[in-house]
Structures are given as C-alpha cells and as structure tokens.
Image (cartoon, rainbow, N blue to C red):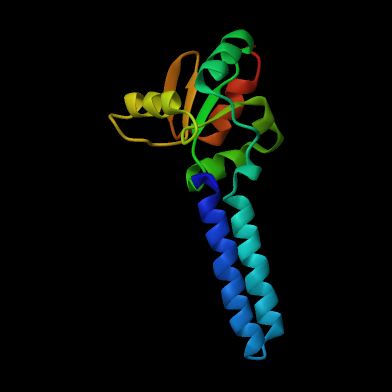
Length: 145
C-alpha cells in the first residue's frame, strides 16, 4: 500500500471501530452515521477524488502544448481538496501531479516555496503560484479574449 492510501484507510478503520462500539451499545443509528461519515471523509481524502496524476515532465510537456495549468498536489491536503472541489468539472482540464509519487515534482514545489512543500502549487506558463484562488485557476483555463 502506498502512503497515499494511509489516511483514507485509517479513517475507515477508526470509523468502523467506533461504529462497532456504538452498535454493541445499542445505538444502530449513531453507528450508521459514524460509519457513513468516516467513509465520506476517507473518500474525500483518497486519490480517487482527483483526476489521474501524471509525471512532472509529462505535465510540463502537455502544458507547453495546450497551455493548461499544472497543479502540484499531495493526498490529504485540505487546500488541494478545496481547489479540486471548487474547480468542479474544470478540474479534469488541469494537469495534476502528485508530489508524493514524483520526486521531480516535489523538488519543483520546494524550489518555488523556499524549501517547503506547500501545495497546491499551480504552474502557469512556467511560473509557480502557491495556493491560488480556485477562481483564478479557472480563469487560466479560459482562452485569452
């Protein structure tokens, strides 16, 4: 198992344990609610919420061709999740790079953020932007007027 699945797995495991305790104490409604909440949180924090990640070099190549932004992200990052959710369907038009899977991407993030792995870092036209507003990223997807 890769470390991208550790947090979702722990959320489901802990939710299952708490739900079992609630069920055994005679609270089936609360047990179901806790289990549902833990599964939803695990889903939001899983890599399944994001479009398939590609490598940093491939993302740079594609971005040079189509002009779309590259988002350097990591699983479990609440700011990355916020960006993904707020982009909605437009998120599929962005090139996503998981920095935990690509050492070159992690190095690019550190170089752009004074040695810190601050994500999301969005690269547009070769310039990094740390944790930009989702509306700004959506504007970068629109063709110039």
